[in-house]
Length: 301
Image (cartoon, rainbow, N blue to C red; front, side, top):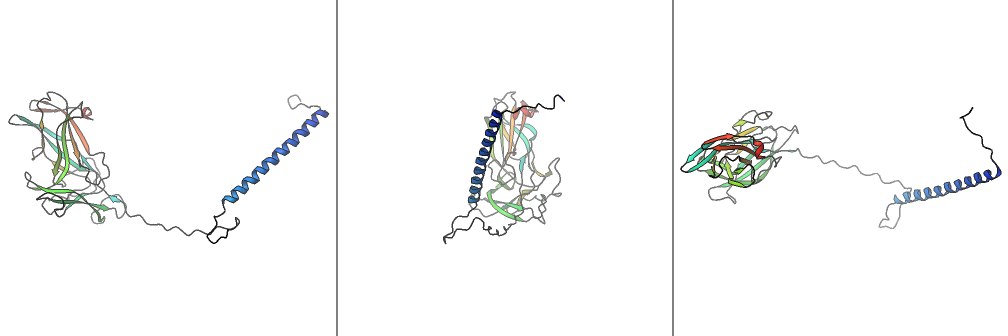
């Protein structure tokens, strides 16, 4: 039976030691019991309500009053905001005027947000002579489906966002600060030449490539003095390269350097939209005399 256990003969001395240890164990347990009792009393005391102004102190054993049910306030439907983004410039070409070379290009403003960009004309307000104020209108998603429906989602919020003016070259009305154009070298952030406030007549021209169709038909198109302007969700406002103002002067000392054409929507941050960080885009290119050659755009990131 080896391995099951070992029998030890207990002598008198051993019995005393065991008895002493047992007594010590009882004392330790008793001390722990006291500590636990004191701790329970402290917990009970912590549940006592502070004295009232009348001077009576409720007993710790009294049941707390039943709290009244909390009223749930319904939240309004979420806003359907636009998200404006400049698409990459296209149709880059060189135009020579006298001794100056101009870089011409097409620019596109896309609305990739769930709601329309809608601007309404208002009185002159603080705008210059011959101009009037522009008010941005924002819709609420009535059925909370995340899709804009013109017949269902009501226009609610209005916000003064800038001015409208009559463009002398285009012969119709524009929102005054819809885009910005600039040129720089690929290895530098220093701007060589820029137009920081480009006006646009806002309308639906093309559908955003690769985006799910939300608004199937063109809605915005008129840019008269008193008409609303805007870009529907999933639509693009295209300005072709041959239109007035669609160019930047090409500096004479750029040689064969890689240049970056930077485009940005809403450069002054006047519009309310879902994302303010994705408004800009860049295109890299080289110029050889009157020829433009696109290169890897990674050089301009």
